[in-house]
Amino acid sequence: MSHAEHIDMLHGPLLGKIILFALPVAMSSILQQLFISANVAVVGHFVSPQAVAAVGGNGPIINLIINLFLGISIGANVVIARYVGRGIAEDCQTAVHTVMAVSLLSGVFLLLAGQFLAPLMLEFVEVPEDVMDLAVLYLRIYFLGMPCVMLYNFGAAILRSIGDTKRPMYSLLVAGVANVTLSLLFVVVFDLGVAGAGLATLSGNLLSAGLVVYFLLTEEEPIKLRLRKLTIVKVHLLRIIRIGAPAGLQGVVFSLSNVCILSGINSFGSSAAAASAAAVNFEFVSFFIVNAFCQAAVTFTSQNYAMCQLERCAKIFRESMVCALLLAGLSSLIFTVGAAFFTGLYTSDQEVIKLAVTRVLIVESMEWLVASYEISGASLRGMGVSMLPAMVTLIGSCLLRIAWVYTMFPLFPSYEMLLAVYPVSWIVTGCFMLAVYFPIRKKLFTERRAGNTCTPLEF
Image 1 (cartoon, one colour):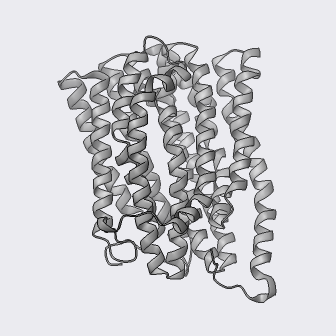
Image 2: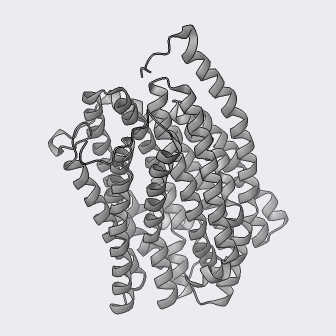
Image 3: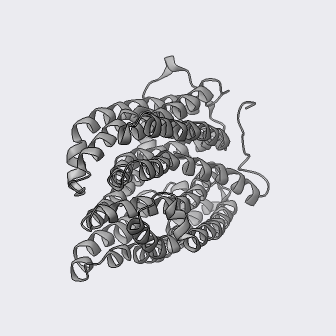
């Protein structure tokens, strides 16, 4: 694969390759988040706190919609990685075209649905009245770019299945620079306000998708994209859904729980909504570091488990977990120590800064805890177990958060009590996930070794 940064996941030392794989993924996610956070900063300094709440407050809704399809993209990553690991070029080719066809159709569906449902979604999260019109406008513009968002994320999953994490990052780097430049141009120069921020994000999404599609069109076998071959092959789609749908369901319910928390935050007014919209950007950075090592864990595990290299699978888990904890912990420490400075980058309103710092101290300082369940769940998905980690996360994190909003929060209706649900849910979910990971792994390894005939995995 002369055009691809192909990482050999089946042979040699793992740590350096895991880091080489994960860091560009983390940077890609961080750059993608800059599409929103740059807009939050621009409108915060040049428009109003209401504009900040309108742009940033859409984040949980956007994540709720996208996460279902991102989960399916994890399934695509696992399936294609297994085909690559086993050297099955023909199945890999048809799977690639199935994935891209699904991404395009999904994006068009979301584009249309978003135009009609934007007001209802924002009413559901109880967006403050003085923010509603701006929030609806931004959300509708954002959904115009959904085909691009889907094409980028599914296309990036295909590239990552062969270890190519750099070109998705390059795509977002170019798109991120364009987004920030256009946001300043549309908002500051042309005075388009929230609409300008939305149009800048739309342009960035279009550019990142175009670059990833170009990379796939010019790629070599077995992941080369040919537009005339776009089709949906049932057997590949079912395999992708079997692994990806539980992860997508987990992401949807997870986002739904955050939407419930957002409703509580919005009840404190537009200043609290703006503060949360600013502070959550730092949480995203720490989470993206963890998620990058999750992507490494699921991809490396998929290839090695398919070829019955079980000791390497165990080592992948250990090294991914340690890296995620250390680097996410460092990120959390930096943002916590510099909380006032970093929140000041998004707004000059002192009340908003005060509330944002409070969120950083309660939530971001503990963000590294998510590695305990995210890496464990990713490792299980790499071995083909997807429903169990989804259910553990559903119960330990999602349902607990919803219960907290409707029980503890009404008893102690403070901003701080509402935010405390995050670290509590991370601790509970992490304990549950680790408690199921080790016995499930032991059982799977025992089954694969049965009779001393550990053969390459069949679907």
